[in-house]
Image: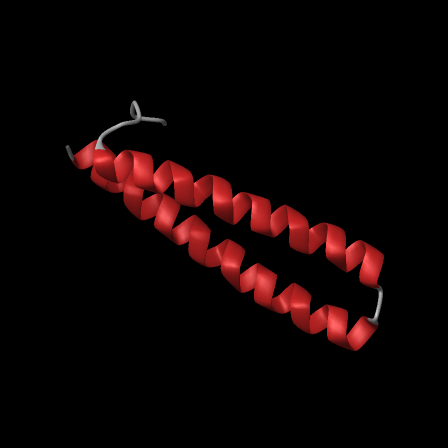
Length: 68
């Protein structure tokens, strides 16, 4: 069970990092006005957050096999 707990902690940390990156990108978009590049990067971060959030939910419910 500790492997799953460790995986959950790691995924939660990665979600936090991705959210921080998303906040920074939004601030950069406001400052730089380079909407196309920043919009692409924002979309990438949002996709990563969604993917990791789904993986976290699966791990917490026991529905997903352990992923290293």
